[in-house]
Length: 178
Image 1 (cartoon, rainbow, N blue to C red):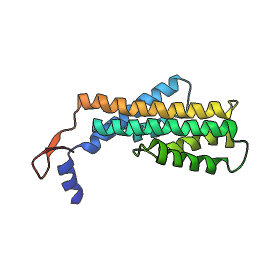
Image 2 (spheres, one colour):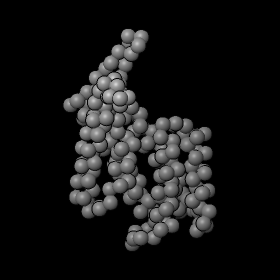
Image 3 (cartoon, one colour):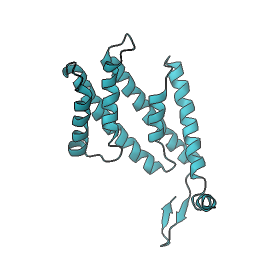
Image 4 (tube, one colour):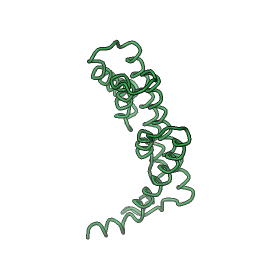
């Protein structure tokens, strides 16, 4: 019966998030289908990571994801362009990306997004599957990630206007978000 107590305490947050994700996934699916792109997985996974019933948290995720995705994209592209064709390109690029995000950029929210994005960009060279160049494929994937981030935070914002997350009182009596 712990789930019932959790539901009573937290209300409909899970339903709220599920609705956000349903709406954003539907929008991304329609947008990407209209653009002639069949595989929306990168955009949808980014949207999920950028969504939250609480708008402030969604913006925090969005900011961290965008900054770290841009860093990963930049490092990935640099390694694609100047890294040669070494089999060590991927692990070295990911390690460099982690060091940059940890010690230079220092945006801890979604910091793992930087090496993930670098891997997406570099993997486009490792697995040839298209007439596009690896740089074009990498940029295409990063565009999908950015679109997903924008969709996640936009739907979170819209849903916060249509169905705001209720405030509750914490044990000290102060207002707190669920």
